[in-house]
Each structure stands twice: as structure tokens, then as C-alpha cells.
Length: 192
Image 1 (cartoon, rainbow, N blue to C red):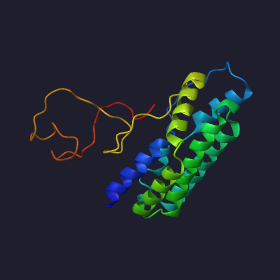
Image 2 (tube, rainbow, N blue to C red):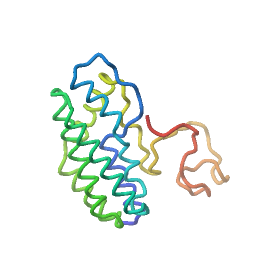
Image 3 (cartoon, one colour):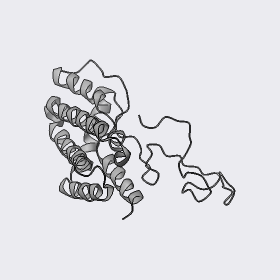
């Protein structure tokens, strides 16, 4: 498996966990709910934490991983009872992802292997993540889990139904075969 494939796996698996867009938290909940809403806004988008980890300075990577671990653990600590089990499942997967990156900062293939194992060991994480996303939207007015384009490892996807001019530079291809970098330049902010 090449580094590009390993990076896509890492990003794809990280997307199972929470990525956060900024939004306001409503004030109509109880103490646990208000604390949860505040904490959900503090979560760093996991994709941003691990993006480019093999090229990131060790001190910076360590800080990002520690900050993310603290934020997600804090979310678990304040999760309201009705969503606590789902938060626990998501946080356990997030911690496994962070641990895989921390244990393999220079080896995306080894990190990807550990991530695949973590996903297998957390089979309920996707459903739990959906419950947490729904809860955050309903109770906190927070948008979680933006669309992920696994092929280009961005957090926005553009779908076009217009005909394309294959072979003309800058048109028709999102895989880089037209001379572009393969990404989409929508001008829209990624995430939330």
C-alpha cells in the first residue's frame, strides 16, 4: 500500500469520528446539555489534527494530538446521560485514531493498519457518530461531520451534471489526469 492510499485510509477512517463546524449552542438545555454544547464547539476537526502528520514537526504533532485527546475526553466527561453511550463509542475510536498516529508519526501505512483494526474493534462507531451528530444538531445547533471526499481527502465535494471537455486542461477531471492537482476549487469553505 502506497503513502497516498494510506493517507486516504487515514482520512476516511478519521471521518467516522467527529469533525466540527462552528455554530452557536442553544441555552435551553440543562447543565449537562449546556456543558456538552460548549465542549462540542471546542472539538478540533479530527481530519485537521491528523492531516499531513508524517510531515508535521514532532512537537507540533504532539501538541495537536494532546489537545484533541483532551477535547474529546472532555466531551465524554460532560455528555448527557441520553447520549453518553454513543459519545463513549465515538471517543474510544477517536482515541484509537490519535494513538495510531502518535505511535506511527513517520509511517502512514502502519497508522492505517492500526486505524483499520480500530474500526473493526468499534463496529458501532458509525451509528454512534450519527446519533451524536443528530443530538448536537437538535440540541446544540452545531453542525458535525461534514461531507468527506475520500479520493482527494478534502471536506467538500462538488458534483456537476454539466458535460465535460475531456482532455482539455482544467476541465473534466478530478483525478489529476488533466494536469490539475486533482482537487476541487469551489471557493467554498471546507467543513461546517
